[in-house]
Image 1: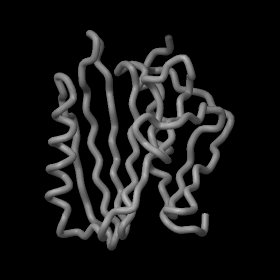
Image 2: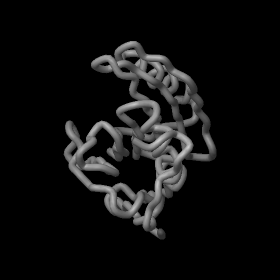
Image 3: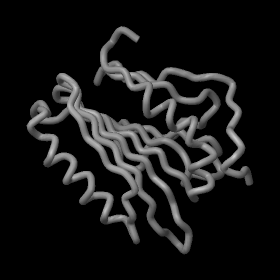
Image 4: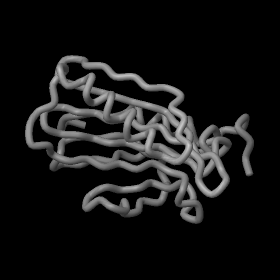
Length: 164
């Protein structure tokens, strides 16, 4: 297994685009695209199809009404509450901000499953009535550290609009 000092190699990036909901982001080329359990339209990108605990979940939906900056405190509280439901959860970072009509929240957390510590990075983005949920996760903190550069690219390359 790779150490956290090593960095993953990749052959390029591909665009994950959802025409209906109007967003795009970049994901590593060659990652396996799978259906996301519990979601009709969500996808899970796995760098190794033999390790389905490590990868990037992408899921979006239309909400009944628009999300506004005034909703930020409630959204942040809900994110923290949800993460605390993970077994032996430890939230290491949580932030939220509104930039114009874009609302973004993110948190990093660890939790315990079957004797191992897993790491997760959640990013929620809201624009108008669209909610986009990204979850980068790994089977261990070491695997997360290894794949973090790829997770970072996906998490930070989100673009709303149909012009990408």
